[in-house]
Image (cartoon, rainbow, N blue to C red; front, side):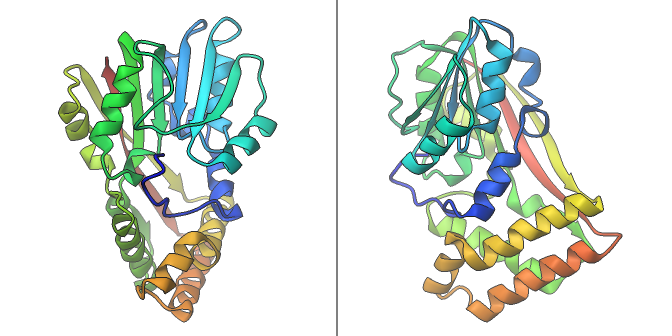
Amino acid sequence: MASREHYTHGHHESVLRSHSWRTIANSAAYLEPHLTPGLTVLDVGCGPGTITAELADRVGPDGSVVGIDASAEVVALASDAASRPNLTFAVGDVYTIDAADDTFDVVHAHQVLQHLADPVAALREMRRVCRTGGIVAARDADYSASAWFPGDEWMDRWLALSVTIGRANGGEPDAGRRMLSWAHDAGFADVTPSASVWCFATPADRDWWAGLWADRVTQSHLAEQAVDSGNATADELSRMADAWRTWASNPDAWFTVVHGEILARA
């Protein structure tokens, strides 16, 4: 992400817990058929590098991957945890990528565009560093399309708060539904749109998902911003966390996160 934006979630352990869970299978399956040995790949907003490392495995040994992120702390973590001979990490800005035109065969971004004030400019820059005929691939959640059962007033308020804080920070939490539009505005003519979901409905998945959100809504940078901005009190955030835990304890509980995806030919 670019330094000019204010990242909503920060890098609390509960946030990195979620980021470190992500894999090609659960977060980039739409791109997987296009990953072949020998490709050069840029992973924008790489976070702790779990997807990035798998990209390096897929295109190696002759292909190479570069992962960039705006956070030096997270880049250091990724460098230690996801070391590969054909993989490098660096601090970088999606608006001004440190690479020549036509450098990469694939430029990938997962959950990045939703945090940007100008996602179209970011896509144009991703296109600049992608070779002609290469792929710019992006996937982002659509917060307001999230669905869960059973309903709960405090989980409704959690969603409304997340959207409010995200937009106050210059981003668009409902990015998923806008991906195709942003790609067209960025000048891409050949775009394949798709959608996929994360589903949390087994006991283990419910406990994990609810646990990280209960922690995130009370302990992360999101919680600090909510209180500082007057959008929620500490007591209200605690009620949201309790609602998450109560939801997870219900054997019928279900949660889906909808994502929009684009494969755009440069």
